[in-house]
Image 1 (cartoon, one colour):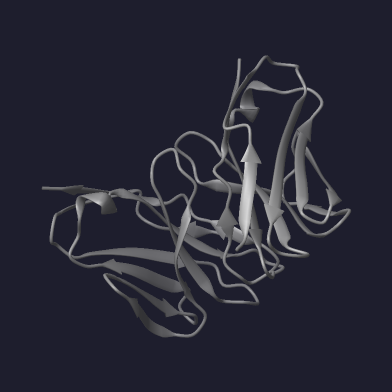
Image 2: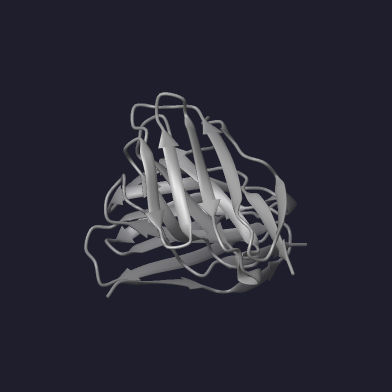
Amino acid sequence: GQNIDQPTEMTATEGAIVQINCTYQTSGFNGLFWYQQHAGEAPTFLSYNVLDGLEEKGRFSSFLSRSKGYSYLLLKELQMKDSASYLCVSFNQAGTALIFGKGTTLSVSS
Amino acid sequence: SQTIHQWPATLVQPVGSPLSLECTVEGTSNPNLYWYRQAAGRGLQLLFYSVGIGQISSEVPQNLSASRPQDRQFILSSKKLLLSDSGFYLCAWSVGRREKLFFGSGTQLSVL
């Protein structure tokens, strides 16, 4: 299987910045996704990195280092609605399907 | 625009009963289709994926099976449910193998 490691839980306060790290076993294709999942709901797409570097999209940014098998999701100006699970997602060995990490549950407090 | 429909939203079934969950996609042709399961407190586990009609790949051995009788229809089945089959089942589709996934709203299955 594909090992994807990310912290289980994180806490932060409104307006703060939080970085969620992810390490994964590289396969033949090294693109990486981040998804957000609110409790009881389906995951929704946040970002996709296929090249090394930082991709910025509004309050959310995602970074990838393919050689290191490392990514992070950066959330700025946190809001209460950002309380959710953040899933780091890589490819299976065949590159044919996405494999999800267990997710990092982020709790944002006022 | 593309939409994905998954039903039912919730399901309570006794152990040993059969299962059939259906998923359909609209607004696209020849999508890649997927079934994932999320057990309580665990990550999403890929169960099956399909790149075309009649083409099913299984990621893990289990008590479940999948079928794709039509291009935009994906069915998850079981002949006899186990307690361990309880979980949140999600159907998803993508344009290609390395494209982002779009998820259905999910089915919460409780096997009692």
